[in-house]
Length: 98
Image (cartoon, rainbow, N blue to C red; front, side, top):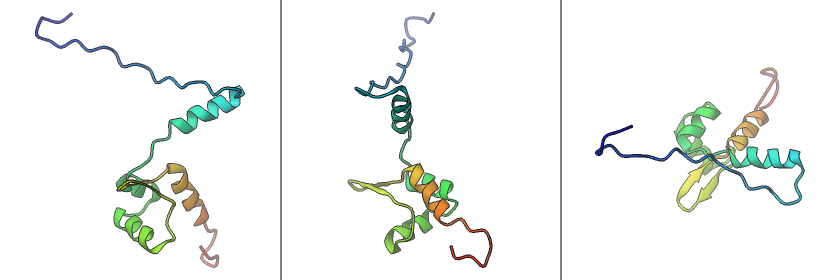
């Protein structure tokens, strides 16, 4: 294995989701999917949204941007809210309003 000076580290524990009492298997799977969605910082959310971080900051101030969470002083975005915002702005031609 290693010599006396090398640190020994335990293998990472697998992430285990507790079963939801009374939930069907489909509900269990949905619970696990929701629990695995990590909130995004502004810079990462901007990449997903296809805009600059400054644009997201301006949209937070002016309105019209994706929903966000304010956790203390920290602002984060749910990736599903970014996708919903993009879907709301989908147009088929230049004659359609965004």
